[in-house]
Image 1 (cartoon, one colour):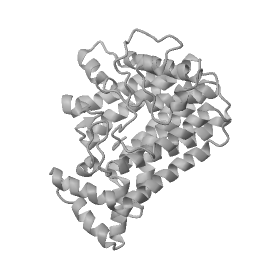
Image 2: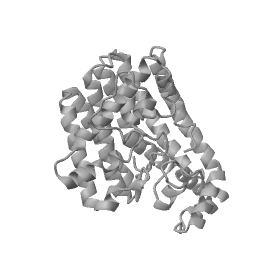
Image 3: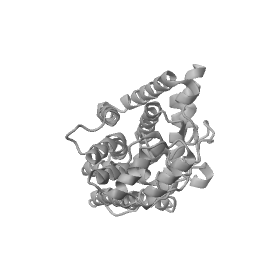
Image 4: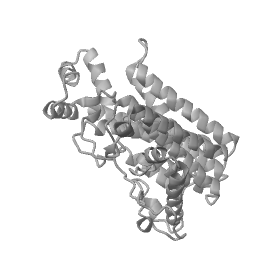
Length: 367
């Protein structure tokens, strides 16, 4: 996702030995895998907790196997983001939703690897498009090796994802292909901007639905499919994933202007300085166009020179106090509430509770 900073819910398992799989009763602490906020109920479940953390470790191991290359340069560039860590939200959703059926099927772990590889491939491309200097607290691939190498590495990782998904059958291949199409269209529409007759806020919501929501939706859907879960669950998991993905990105937008330094090392206002469109600024432009004096004055600062830390801090402080920030939170929480509502037909239990808690957690964080 373009302006996602991988803000919190860090993944501590990137140092996990690549050749050792944990025993079935492995806990999150033993594997070094830290479950994201909102999924605490998983760790407390005597059966689900060990199953999820064990499979997360398997996903981590298979990620490294999937990107390994005999070519030294390709190996180094491909490992760059995997070894930087990450929340692994998408594979976690795949594994969790698989517990609506038979989560022990090996295809479930492979599907989880596919969605994370697809996500990683987009990050290489996004960082080039945005000229982003950092990702997950480390220099981006294009800063280290240049744009061409970074783009080709993203292509290579997506090729590895395609190989794995092809082994899962034509239906999975179709889901991944349609998802990747939406990822590309979202990036294209973000690049060219809204049409003259298109509302900028609605355009932006459509972009992040494509760029973030689509892959989150596919993650849960694939988990249900390969666990043989009730087919009626698929559509609601897709709806949930779309909406919770949008809520997640909107929360990231607001966090960028709250003045709290995030765990990834991304400082507040980074999106402002880089000119990345975010919901608070879009709402500010809307209010300024409607004649709101406070919005007009603040927008002049937003569109001014933000190269100095002092100028950026002034804009961050102004946006933090402006009503558009609270309005942005309300919009994010509405998407979260709609995601929770989509889960209503699911049977009660730790899977439904965890998905619900995650939807709340994405809009209740500060970093």
